[in-house]
Length: 244
Ligand code: GLP
Image (cartoon, rainbow, N blue to C red; front, side, top):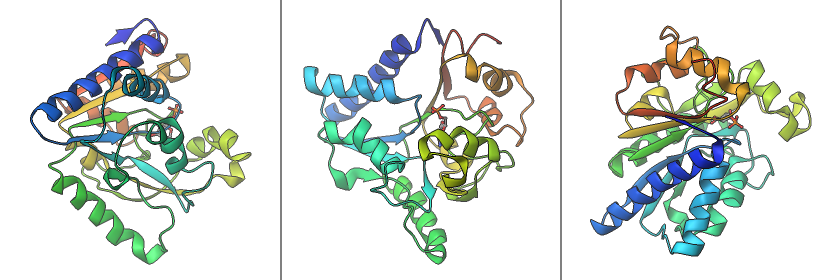
């Protein structure tokens, strides 16, 4: 779906999330959301915060699982995805902290594998992700599933692509400060979500959106795997859709 600009598109995605939360509330159930970081979903989170403040949208029945976190990473660090999520969403809504899940960047190396198995198990215990939102990196990564990621991959420790670290260098004051690794949900984890929404804004993303939507399905561009899913929407602004 192509919208005039990212503001209009973000409001549509936020409404879709709000409708899911409200319909689960009516059924006395929890809504299980897969959340993303980066600049792309910021407008969606802003709109959800506005709906909470002005329209009384409650997140008490919401459980969240974030896609990824840098490794190693302290949650209190300004660059952590924990800080990002707190500042952009969780500090401004009534979600219960025990319902928030973000991969743990503080684990010792020998604790990571068990953590990842448990992350998958927790998602499954909640009945799976009702809705997973995604941005896309210029390498074609979703979450931090870089080129080479297998379609059935699960939550795991990965090595970041050089381009991804260059794109993150502004946040870290230089590429040399960007962690070389991250913990990310896998392509297989994302595929199990009942619905997937990938968002992209601006001409900067137009070449990778063309590859993701029209290119050959290949591990070289992990977002192309989404062509194989029937429950996925690409939500784009006109600039990101310009090469389609
Ligand atoms: C990071 C995140 C991804 C995100 C990507 C794009 O690599 N791990 O989940 O999609 O950046 O970021 P942005 O939305 O800032 O373009």
